[in-house]
Amino acid sequence: MPNYDVKELHLAEGGRLKIDWAEREMPVLRQVKERFRREQPLKGLRISACLHVTTETANLMKTLQAGGADVVLTASNPLSTQDEVAASLVSHDEIEVYAVKGEDNVTYYKHINAALDHKPHFTMDDGADLVNVLHQHRRELLPGVVAGTEETTTGVIRLHAMAADKALAYPIVAINDALTKHFFDNRYGTGQSTLDGIVRATNVLLAGKTFVVAGYGWCGRGLASRARGMGSNVIVTEVDPLKALEAVMDGFRVMPMADAARIGDIFCTVTGDINVIDAHHFDLMKDGAIVANSGHFNVEINIPALEKSAKSKRLVRPFVEEFVTPDGRRIFILGEGRLINLASAEGHPASVMDMSFANQALTLEYLAKNASKLEKRVYAVPEEIDKKIAELKLAAMGVSIDTLTAEQVRYLASWQEGT
Image (cartoon, rainbow, N blue to C red; front, side, top):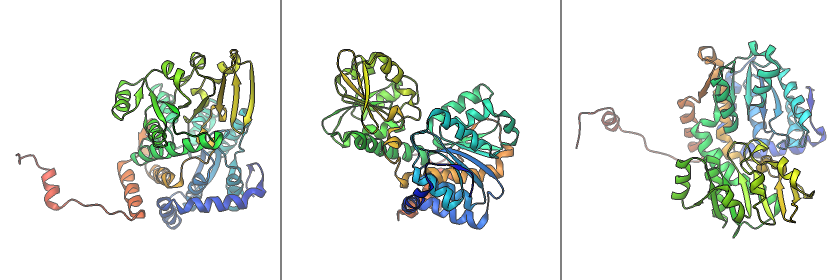
């Protein structure tokens, strides 16, 4: 039995059933796993992964293990762990896991340090917390780290800041920036799973509600589209004029958060920035406003400011806290302001995580072969990996596409022929 800290091992059988269910929807990763088992491209490598501990992540861990890697997994968010999945990985797959849903901040960082005790050759991160701890507090391990990967937008932003400060000690590939990740995972995965989390937490009817989406990146696009599809009147808030213009052209109302705060029924932040919904916005919200976040960290909503001003606070449903303002208005915060799609629901559907995690697995294989040639900066996923995953996904879906003829190839490579 490996070292571990999970809630209860007797949950393992239920976790295995859920992991197997997710694998049915992950045909690309399954093909990668079968090849990895034959070729052993990660043999002898130690990998410390800080990811959401879900059924999809479990299938990624099993894929890396099949490829010969020695893997340790810790949670990248205190509320995102599926306890039965963590138990199954320990009991059935002998993978070290350090993750308990609802763990406090002290335990969260204790678990990150336990994963780093593995002395990794490679890091896998979702939000850059593991990389951050490694660079600030565990620098004695840095000489042994070869390279890493980063899963999400927030983490990539932090890594670019580290690279700009010349603080990044090894090369990291931004999985988030792969087209087969952010086009699909961020747009379709976040769009669906965020609404799933909000509805599971509140059981509110979305039709007819004014739904405010803060941020119109790929996650915001997906969320706004899905909320409109459920009958909501969608407002988008933005700071980027190009994205704001795109939202207008897509048919959404666009306005500052201070204006949206007065009329919104449901608010959801997906920006990756701090205090997007701030104290002065809470002052403008109407009674019964519901506020959620689907960005990686809970800093997007200034909950400390709301706590300071509220005259009372209580948990009225699982993952729903009621704050009563001095003038008697009720504001409901979902999932402690953490990722609502993972706090009260199950995260992205397996079929989109299939592509994201195939990117993780194939990029690690790429890094195992090429990391010594790379500089200490943030890299994009190689285009050939991105295209290969798209090809495998189309084939798994039974979709065929055209190929260029020799004549078309020659035409595209020429410049002499005009109108």
